[in-house]
Image (cartoon, rainbow, N blue to C red; front, side, top):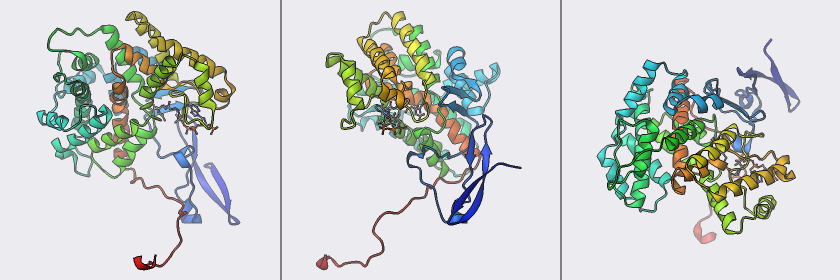
Length: 427
Ligand code: SDX
């Protein structure tokens, strides 16, 4: 007998089915609630509400577990490369050697961006934030590939997936170069994905550019750690836009915009700016811990807290170790790293943070590594977007293949009740 949940409303007892996932997570299926009771549920921020059933990522916020298609983030970060993880997320299995070579080969031959895209760059002010530029350019890509418009699952979805994975690094690097007034670099097909991104971002025509293998390896790990995270804000945005059968470029562009927010992917930029502010203010971590606790002070400890992780964010643990390794390998002594460590130590002992299960999240240490890799602060969230792209694609593809209904939440109306129109002379 399938498990059910009983609800008594207006003296009437109703039963709703309970569904259970492969990791024993349970949900009450309320899809018939309004039809049977006239009631809806309300849950600001969807803290208790599931939007879908998905086979892509499992995370356990209490235990600090994160798995992509069943593989632990620890193993993938240590043993896989970003394109292999992208294939796993999008197609559900780790690629065979032949599948991997075919996938990487296709991506390599799609890294060039239509030269007309360069003209769009010219329309942006030099100091435009690269997240806004990138979101616009990804949406503009739909114009270059109009066969992505049709509202059936386009047969060539795989080609659009390849184009996005291949061209986003080029577009991202062009955003950086354009903002500096430097000549744009073209991809070099002999380089691997991360090395190619680095050379497009940092190579200058006046001298040879050698990719530092330590930097490329660290970037590969960071992109894997950012690749997917189930129904977070930006992924839910991609799904909602995709649920109207909008094309993949428009859906991903919407995800980039959602990720930009300082409470979401934009936090990695906010963390470094916060650490720099603390350093400039004399390095008094406790002062900022107290500000974060003060309800009258809008200041939040950026990079701390998480909607789901009520224990350590497993990604933060891995990035923290990588931080030490990368800075040591590059011979960098970054004073804000000490401030970050002091903040973490103080917060993890403080009742306010302990009671609210506020731990460092993926954004707390990532900015320190990005900066050590030479990446400018306003490009940190762009790096997050490059990492998250395969996750967005995988979730969009799953939604479309499962023919999920258009997303359209309900509401409770709290405005004026019915009233007659008043002519302007009588108002
Ligand atoms: C990402 O969802 C994902 O998976 C996201 C992500 C992914 O991979 O896609 O993991 C990436 O977005 C990581 C989060 C990056 N954002 C930040 O670091 C910004 C700082 N953190 C927060 O603003 C906050 O913690 C959120 C947005 C991450 C989570 O917010 P919630 O779940 O809505 O929790 P909340 O705001 O209701 O906070 C609960 C309590 C509140 O205090 P009380 O009302 O109970 O007194 O904790 C407090 C908050 O004031 N709180 C903080 C805090 N975060 C929460 N207080 C101080 N500093 C903070 N950082």
